[in-house]
Amino acid sequence: MADEARPHMLSPSAWNRYETCPRMYWLSRQGLPRKAGMAASVGTAVHASVEDLLNLDITAKPDSESGWMVEEAEGVLKRRWEEEKASFMATPRRPKWKEEKWKDALQHQRGGIIMLLDHVGIRGLDHQRITAALWRKIQSTAIAVEGELKTSDGRLMGRLDLLMADLDADGKPSGWLVADLKTGRIPEGELKVDVNRQLRMYRDILLANNPDAPPVRTEGWYTHDASKWAAVGESVLEDAYAAWQATVPTPMPMEPTVGDASCGGFCDWKAWCPHWWNWRHENGTLHKSDFSDAVVLLHHFDPSSGAAVLELCEPINAEGRAVPTGVQQSAKFSDRGKEALQETLAAGHQGALFLGSVMTAQRVWRVGHWCDVLPWAPMPDGVEHHR
Ligand code: SF4
Image (cartoon, rainbow, N blue to C red; front, side, top):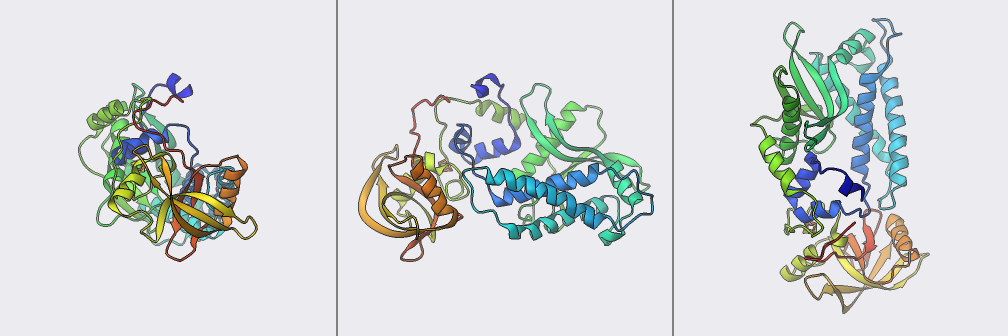
């Protein structure tokens, strides 16, 4: 209901999802249970903490005061970390929270601070030696921190991390820099196509809304090694509007793009999609890799040990109706995998189960904290779905 009342708006991440597989995009809008992820939570906490540091009120500190940044940075990160942890734990579809990732979060945050120092020409400075005067200078170059960008017609949008003033050799503002903090993998040679498109979309919305803007450039700031990657190229607005048109919500499921790059990658919606299953069944790759997705029946489950007997299923038709094969498979459910199974059973589910990323390399399959355990509920092609 809410979706129908709200005008359709396209973000770069929805656009990327659509480009990867229209069905994935369509499924992501059906109100299905969202999956929390550790990498995403670390990223959100780091982003928020860097933004907090840029908004930090240090007016009371004298210019020369140093020795406060490391403690302050850790304090803001800790607060954001705890917030993220609470929202992660409140998400039913989630893996295990990994406390040990705290060290990575600190390293990413340090990378963010290094890049902010670099922005005003300071390199190799021990963060304990950052003075209040230096941090105020960095803060003064931040024109906007964490804001929503939207075209005037409300069709294209994005969340801007940092809009910084670019400084010339004399320290005078010479243009704008759209910087997007990235806690993911460092690019190999050049930015990935989807990241490049995302950054240019931010740049182009900004330019469309500010016809008198100074020169605008855009960079991905990779916190892992504090490297900055420019996104250059023509305006993406024409393509973005075409994508907006193509992504107008429909009750009918959109076309799937089946294949290694889509189904073989990270698709969170496999429990509702029959296509990956038919594709693997037909090309003989079902259950063949060390980590495999499967549709199974549960014949026996011991809640205390997690030991289970499964029966493997195969698709009987294009809609993904499951037929038992008679092949029995021992499995061991542990950690979040076991909890998720128990939650699914407690909710009254009785039919086939979807198991995502099961470790199938050994005689006994392992369904652990990294796995999805969900009712198998494929949404067939050609049948309208109204939320
Ligand atoms: S499983 Fe494959 S075809 Fe289905 S939505 Fe995901 S990426 Fe698309």
